[in-house]
Image (cartoon, rainbow over the protein chains, first blue to last red):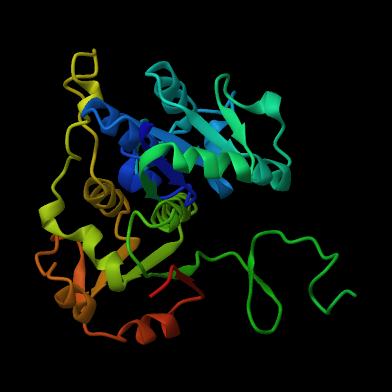
Length: 127
Length: 159
């Protein structure tokens, strides 16, 4: 039995407000305080797990915002820290995302796999 | 089916008045920002729109309503909280500007072409009456006046 599973569906929120403090960063912080959370990405959030994403930055009024969300590196850091990162396979099909577009180590789950994953975790978060 | 004045006609980016003639003057743009920050990328989109509008010498009025009145609350401060993942790295002393600092910078560098207004009702409802100096607090629905004065009005976000 693993500890926590965070199901993340609402994506791309608060780039200027949050900067580094996005939901995947939040998952890394959970793991730092020993809440060993795994992640399941659904809906638009499946794009967080793509490889070869472009790091974004903004300049607003001459002020550089260079630490905006860069989900690929955070997903890689999660995996390197021992987290399981899953992507909902049905949504991959809907959005036309292929398996070889995912960060290495990200696992695809169909609905049966999602149910199994939920049963294998003590706590479920939904974002 | 092509409609009169639309369809295949190439748009040159210049505003047309009601008689259809071209004008090259800067536009007056009203952006009504509603809804809470952090819930979507609407706030980020607004800031990018304002930034580009300033670059093109347009005049922008921002009216904040609902949860959007919180982003100019003085209590936010100039910096975000420390990023705890930076501890023990070369970024340990790095500071990240708050959304408040970004907005203050935009207002300061706008050379008077950006006016930022805050709905009094929504502000008081959310207990964020301590607003920064660069914005003005206005009575509710005063935005109707600014809508009448603007060439373009954008409503952004849910109430």
